[in-house]
Length: 418
Image 1 (spheres, rainbow, N blue to C red):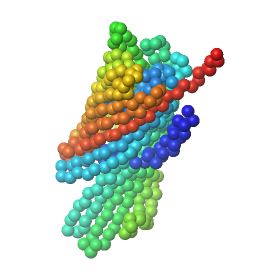
Image 2: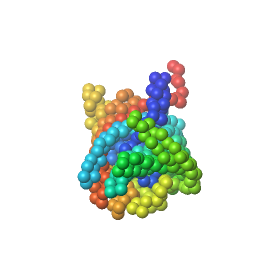
Image 3: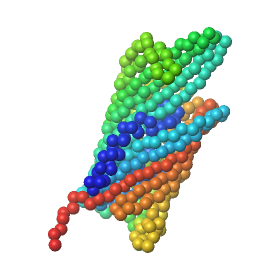
Image 4: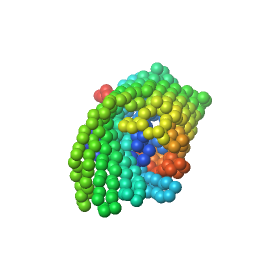
């Protein structure tokens, strides 16, 4: 157990280094940035299905699942994303590694408790364009980075062996930096560059409620359903703006002058409410197939630092279909028969509308759960597409390679002496 705690301490101290650079999507320019998946890697490998409550695997999508735990469970995960971004005329590639979650689940009979840290959203983009006239050439650059993380704690109670309820309380915090630079080059090569830098710090609370129900249909088949609701949250923001004349040396060092700091009016940014309902059918420790629908109230979203006339928000829908298969969970002769094989599909209307085009996200998922006693290593593979090249927009084709560690141990048990 001490070795496991040392491993988790090492992982925890790497979180800060990951937090600033975990997306490279131009669509993270809008709203609160690119919203991150809220579950563990086993759920992600099933298209984002959150209906499973496991005795040795921590599930973070539905807080009602915590009371299903029989072991003290540590969970941590991360993802490496490779993206090809394409317009109607050109394309670029980007790669990022991101921290996904760090959580601990504790069983106390009919009560389960969990707490942890995970990102809610991330900002990371760099867009450039130029305009050339007879008088001068102007280069424009917009770039940004930052994140919103959340620390959460939750509890669950098993009303009966079939029904459990739970709730999470989360504190969100983070900051964004957005730079807008204009570089003017005259015909005599005289240069004049101005930069506007906006820094926004955010914090606020949200909550998440969950219900998990399962029952036997017959001697083999189980039916289970999941319901979660996250209420709308309001994040308080404090923003400052710096306007300066800048000069870049041959080594790329930025020299600024004529600095002017402006304190912007504080505003509240919205984390939208979300309702998810899922159903599944399967055989215990053998197979499961299920589906889940989520509805998000995105229409009240606003941008962080400016209003864009070509951007609106609409309520969004997410659909997931997936499941798992275990050839023989207690096989002694073959390790491969104890592996959990997962697959899934997802579709999401993100709620973002640019130039009258809805930004949609499609993905296919595959995964493996590699058992190690009470512990497990989860590998996930995702191929997906976000956005479109219509109306001057960008299409993103991405591949995610995810890994999650789920470490189980027996705590809080009375020792028996013969």
